[in-house]
Image (tube, rainbow, N blue to C red; front, side, top):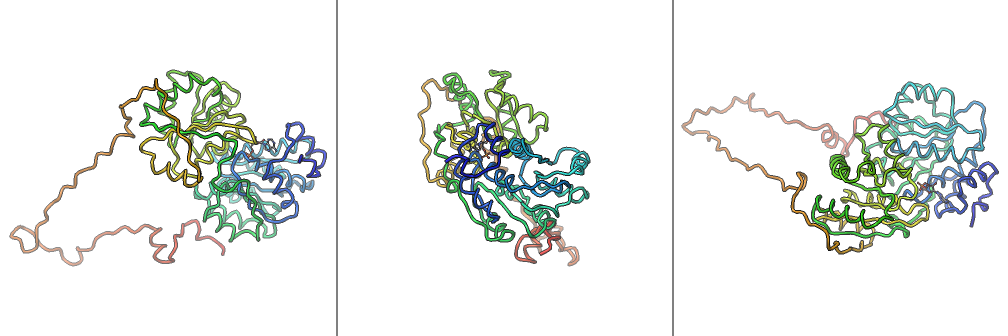
Length: 444
Ligand code: AMP
């Protein structure tokens, strides 16, 4: 089946043709007719399945020109990188149409974005916080929205954006089509669906937790950071076909530490991105990786979510992510759009529980490779790996009332103890469920 079956108009057809995209992916085939019918949709789809085109294509086909440029399509995504990527994809598809697409995200000048918005746009892509700021600033009128897309909603909820989303819903007209995409179906996602969506049709690209078939996974059991570095050196030397490697680590500190150690040997060939690096630094690092100047990019989970880099030959999990879902996200960065890719995972003794949770989640056992014979096993631990030294509890013997010591019982008014009760706990006691300050303004 080709895109011909979608009966696209010429501008869309030509744009796809220019991009060399001719055969729809599974999620694109399934969602197209449902979105065209006007129904709400929940798409369970990981990155790499073609989910962005799955919603943009029908939305652009349904889009009608309006002179006023009142925004009719709102796309909410969790990260700035994803904003940029969705804007690029929409512009690529709409290149032969008279559609204005804009992206807004935090960390940049609010007034400049407000000024640009004032000129009007047809499709608006943004992160929840910045969209709300613009709403409060008075530069965003969402009353003309007809189509709402929430992409990577599971990630958005786990980043704590629920109340911002609620405020945005309150600014939208009730009559609209809702499309939501999530890599995994969590309880929070289900709750949001129930609260805000109108009997959505659920379409799955691949059952949750099922890794894409075209990703070859393998793992090494390896004791510690320094030995992992030694193994990396061996792999990089022995495998010239590892041309574009995205390497994940779970913390910013570890990403930096790894970068500095690897720079010594591979100067100018390695980049690093995480949320403490500024926007420009991140753009430059991603571009150097995209254009092949860097062979490897070291990244933490959240910033890596949004970046779409073609032809990642290998994903390396230098450590294991906290959440099993993130393992799927990580490895989904290779093998994109029906290409094959390889995911290599380093599992240390500290990771036993996370490893079990991942395999359980996927119902798949990652095949383990023996360590190369020439691998030097290091027994030097880095600070983070050293066992915690626990403070000894020193028992202080308190004088008993009635002792002969100089002890007087406190007067009753002085016997009060200051107990700090967290706001969350107070709300829990009062309402039986956690309430945040933000949610207090909730309409319903
Ligand atoms: P996504 O899952 O939306 O992040 O898309 C992953 C990548 O697949 C992007 O680089 C898209 O340009 C590409 N892509 C999406 N749909 C197709 C398709 N039908 N054929 C080939 N590439 C595609």
